[in-house]
Image (cartoon, rainbow, N blue to C red; front, top):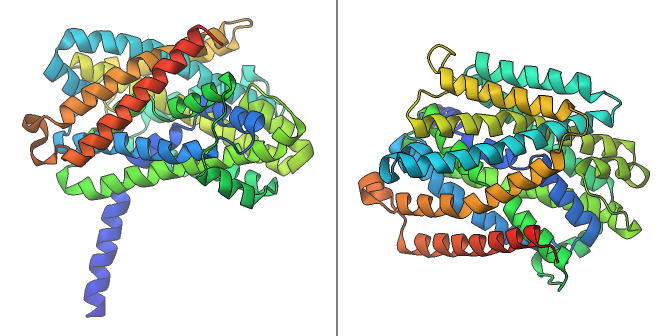
Length: 415
């Protein structure tokens, strides 16, 4: 009897392992160079005061990502595909143009983060950026979806470096517990902007497109919905746990000494005198890992949704001959972004700000389209949102739109 039960258990576990991936990868890679910079700056400037915002942010992220994953397993199509089929090519085309520009800026930021983190170890960006770009390009254009997914999943474990760095900094866990549970509100422009930025860097337009496209390419269906939902929930929780420890590290080491930083690599360097060289090195390695993962996935998401929107063949499993548009879009983004980082005096900061601005403008539209699609019975059948799910979802979207609008206003006209 025990043997008969044991075998099915292993089968279930094997099936589980074969399904997980898209949710964990999408959420974790949201902790890219830009996200890590935001969390580092938040901890260095306001200590533990912003930890509480991670709880509602995690809930919002789970709500949005679960809907997207559900559409992926039910329809077997990417989000761009569904928007094009239901709202027309013209709407989809303009949305894709804005996303392309935004993601180009984000990809530049990823390579800039990769270069900066490696320069901490004395490696010139003129060596490490071309090498990183080449390896990223080879992985996606010559590898299979399975290979890419395995590499990304393994690389997600390197994020644990932030947890070790936090423990090495010897924080006050009692004070952390209070600040995580009890909200802190400060009537301060910078505090407000960082609060909004934490939420804004956690939920981005490219995430929604990449998650649904990767689920579609992996071939997941309705039968896999429960495991896919668990994959999303676990991924969303892990990504904000990592964000929590990044804030804790910088709040413990930099905030008490009044050290102000503007970039994540500055945090890695500044950690050394207070938490030791190992904590500093772990922080820098984790930043390098996050940056190169972002450099893989953000262009990949871009290639996915542009090809889906235009009705072109797309997929990592395809060759240059089978999906030329997909492969050339990916190649062009990698090459131009990496070259731009190598140009002395290139307007990288301006590109990153423009990228954030475009993502902020586009996010409300993506979320509203997602909600309309997920509530369409012709598309989703019995898998539409329940009344309570809609209440939470629309509430989340309204709050995100309000916060994104506030962030855009602050970005255009700083207080």
